[in-house]
Image (cartoon, rainbow, N blue to C red):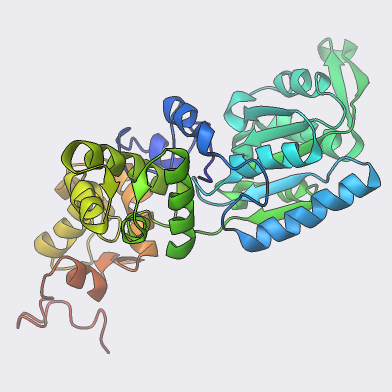
Length: 362
């Protein structure tokens, strides 16, 4: 339903995460093409993000009433929450065309100047992963956003000349998964900043029901709830799981997605009731069974799992920490009581070992 981030620039990909990981929040080019038909076309159709949606609605309607371009918009949040979708909705609401590019694609100031100089008046420029833009291009963007002008340097050395180039008014929509990496001068030039939150299960159920309707899939409320509970609060993952469950229902059942069918299908794809997949459970299992719940160093844990250090740190750990199953401490990684309960294991102190006492008890 609502998803985003078309550029391959997230931590999971840079860390070498499996490309076919079903619960990855990123999407490749092929998946973006498949999901394009599911994107909402206006703010009324957009599910979730109530505060951002309400604030953005005011910004856009005020700009239309003034007959002006909308303020520059910065959208931050984890991958798959709807940043690209909202950028397209902004263009649609303003009745303007949209140009899509990404920070990693702009390595030189000349690259940005070429894009900016070709914009039409009122056009929306969507810049994904804006924090990964090169510094020279970033500095050129300051002036373009504030004064709608860029200085193009012609020549080199003492004979170089700066030629001012006037730009038509445009709206920049920047998206980032790491807002803290944006320099303050760039952040300050955005008139509106919206932070995308993870979705509640009830919101994801609405996403799933809408997507099922567009895909012509019969789904029961309990089936949608089962998929939503395993979607990690992310619409993109919910849509991906829905498509895999649809396949299972068509082949193994009567085509209707019930709670039982959804649970069986996601069991085949190794996505458990809390949204953990094989990699997540491997990290927890090693931490609990091999190291008694920790503390254990990241490198040691990665070796035990058979993955790269960066894969464990950037791909598996963020969700485990957010779910309260793992904690990062100065002494190393430790498992929480919830991790023991989730895997159905007994902590050492409860089994008489006492090895973990002091980590969670005074």
